[in-house]
Length: 102
Image (cartoon, rainbow, N blue to C red; front, side, top):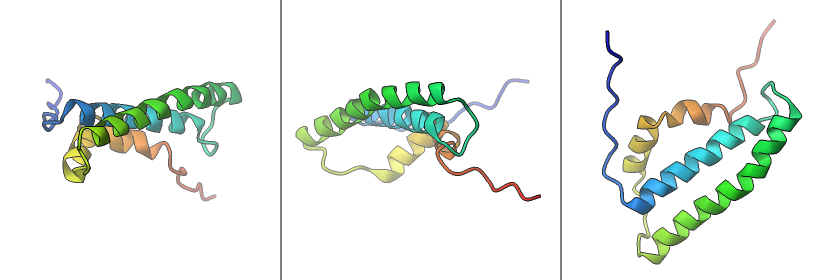
């Protein structure tokens, strides 16, 4: 049986696509740095070093949108894009894990 096909990405400008891509890259790195998750310090250090570059790329995408006159973020459209790209699962790694009772 074939896996369920993902819904198509909504139509985005190139700048919006870059914003979503860079945002998810930052989220992924923050998930790797999250001190509430198991891991080693070297992995977190490498992710923190990469975070600086990715944050600059995210800022550049937003600056480009602003310079082009794209003054508003269309939250509904961008949220659909993030969901198609597995953004909910990826962002969950940034949050505190559930408290283990027992």
